[in-house]
Image 1: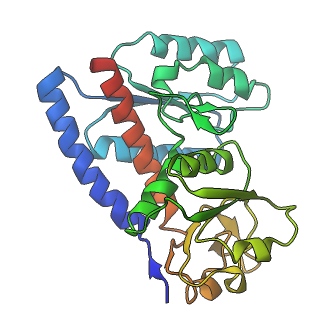
Image 2 (image 1 turned 90 degrees about the vertical axis):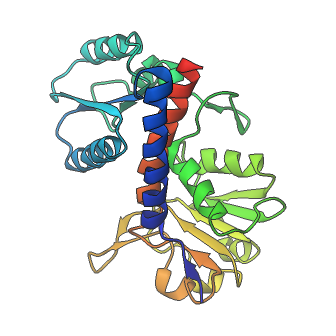
Length: 282
């Protein structure tokens, strides 16, 4: 029977540690780290995500702000706000909540954020599955690695299967796993014989956005399962990319949905902000 990797509890522990760090930073450097989140429009999911980030930032004592802009905001107006924040020495991290309205070029917005303030970790990713030295990793990918490490199992030498090839999770987490000396396979929604591949994996990170694409009969006994997916099942309930009920008895470790990767992603956003702060003051 698989042990539950409780992302909510692990994140709570990290917040305690980071709160202490912020207290020490203010004593040592005369200021606290600053995080500003920009949200454009009224997307309901984005509003919820931003409120969670705001609560987390305040919880550990960051100087936090949310810039709310209407749906009608032009690209030029948004870029002007980013430029202002790039030049503000009290702002260590800038996050533009995605998606932005369709009339705004997402890539131009991402590129406008100063690399040393990019707490989303977009700039840190290089082509060829490597990380740029000195920059932070994308939050969800970093969360996955941290959760794996909390099991006490080593990553080095293990076969890790990443199901999903997206720019936000799949590719970045594969890069980080390679950095931990895992043997990495990337699969996706069109992979043939996914079950055969999955049964050889010591670690599975499911991030393809398909409800319960990984079932218990596809899991190697004792494997570590990290479920990034958040979907609505046929019954309308929230479920992951892994069939929790059938996979848990086979797995060694498994994250629940909700309560696994989600809380840790926000904790890693705060961690990235502290790391950006340190790059500015040291």
